[in-house]
Image (cartoon, rainbow, N blue to C red; front, side, top):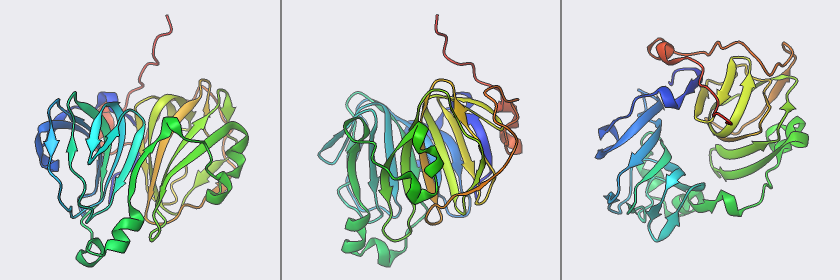
Length: 275
């Protein structure tokens, strides 16, 4: 089980050797991990000239490029490119000539019979999505988020055909504000790619990270600048239950939920200067 984090700015996390991923020549910022399964979420930085050979893995990998460029097989991934490589998928060699920083998510070990089933592997694969080149065509109503439609857009990056687990991006317009709190029956994490977002626990800047257990209360949210956010759910399909809560404010007190080992890093992060 992962710690409840709502929220921490990744800028305050230390870079560490990426040996726990098997990449001692790289470095990472550990966003969260599950000690029972070995699943983890990180910011991974790979140096220029880094290579990984192809071969079927025991776990799922999910990537989103933040900066730089990465080759995955024969496909070039640049900023805002996404991919999901299921356990058992063998064309997963990677290389970077100039270096790359990415969001890197890894599942726990997947059962032998599942990762050996070619149809299962193929149906779960998302080879590449260039978010900058696509349409904001996600259906908010499908996930119980219909009230957001007037002030936001969604792009679904993957929905697992077996578990229903979903990864998606939302983009909100400036000065959108929510009115109700939310709960979901699954665990959910998100990473702020750009903008800022105000909610019950403070104002998040780009680089903010959250992970919440099932049915944790959160929201309402609003943004004076607009925001681009990557969401990732696990444990099943997403539903949303709404409830009334305290009125929204663009200027909430800073009071994040953090485990003891992160509380010393739970300070506000200043927005980027405009002058």
